[in-house]
Structures are given as structure tokens and as C-alpha cells.
Amino acid sequence: MKKLFTILTFLILSQALFSQTKPAFWDDIEKFKKADREMRAPEDAILLVGSSSFTMWKDVADYFPGKTFINRGFGGSSLFDLNFYSKELLQPYKPSQIIIYCGENDFAANENLKPREVFNRFKHFYAEVRRYHPNVPVSYISIKLSPSRKHLWPKFTATNKMIRKFMELKPNAAYIDIVKPMTNSNGEARKELFLDDQLHLTPEGYKIWATQMAPHIK
Image (cartoon, rainbow, N blue to C red; front, side, top):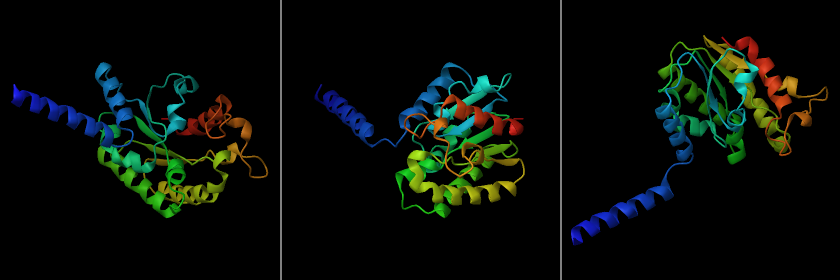
């Protein structure tokens, strides 16, 4: 009995310790796994990978009639997190194409990061995409100029420029610019396209995204 009590105590303490030390976004990834167990993910769907701008786009399929999406955006995630969970995000699926939106939160989490560092994170994730899906078309949506993060715009712009150049040199790859249509003639972000937090998008904002994405949807 004493031995059994010791084992149970050890298991309880181990579980408690794991709960305190498990990696960021562990629960989000577990929810994706659970969803895949309960319903097999469709093949030849469009896989969305990235941060909360995808997470909150719950009606994305309504903007693209006849297309099927697998939305694997998880709020607050950075390119660092996409790399950490690359196997879980990429290996289980057989998509017709992959669209990425991420990078904004890297700078929000650490304002000392340089654009080159975030660009390198993107290159690493792109390599992971190609490891699991060598020939699937991949598109990257440019980092938006969120009004609430105006102090980071120069870094967003520099990172976008590097990623654009990188993607233009790769086969089956595309860079989708959403910055220009979301800014006015003065180069300022159109605040009406954002929710009250001036970070996430309104339906009108997503409509612009859909318009820019449409030529790249296979």
C-alpha cells in the first residue's frame, strides 16, 4: 500500500510539474490534435498557419466559395512558435496549398529583435514546410501595419521586404501584399479596417485580405 501511495504521489506531482512547465501554446496544439482525431482533416484543402489574424477568421471559407480550409492559426503565436510546432502543424495534413500569416508577434514579444532575426525565423519555417510538403504552393501574407503597433512599423516593413525578395526567388511560392490596400494615400493604416483594439480585423479588413489572396488561391 505504501509503495502504491508513493507511485500515485509521484504521478500527481509529475503532472502538476508538467502543467507548470509545458511549452507555450501546448493546449492550442492539443486542441488541433483532438479535432483531427474526432474528424479526419480533408485532403487537398488550403492550410492556414499562423497567428490570431487567422484564428479569428472563422468564416474564411465564406470568402472563397467552393474552397475547403484547415485553419491552424493560434492566437499570439510567433514564427518562433511555428518552428517549435512545425511537425504538429504540417505533417498531419495533405493540403493543396499553404498560406502563412505570422511575424507580427515576434516583434511584439521582443521589441529588441532585428528584422533579420525574424526573417531568419521565417526562412527556417519555410524550410520546414518544404521538408513536409516539397511541392505544395506556399504563400506568405505580409505583416500588416496594425495601428496599435505603429512604433514597430519600420521593423515590419523591413521584414516584409526581405520575405518578399526571398519568396519571389522560390518556386511554387508567392508573397501576398496586404499593406498597400490597407493604407491610405498618406501611407497611414486605415483604422476602420481594424476592431477597437486596432490590432485585429473587421469583416471589411478580411474582405481586402480575400481580394489580395484570390489570385493566389489554386
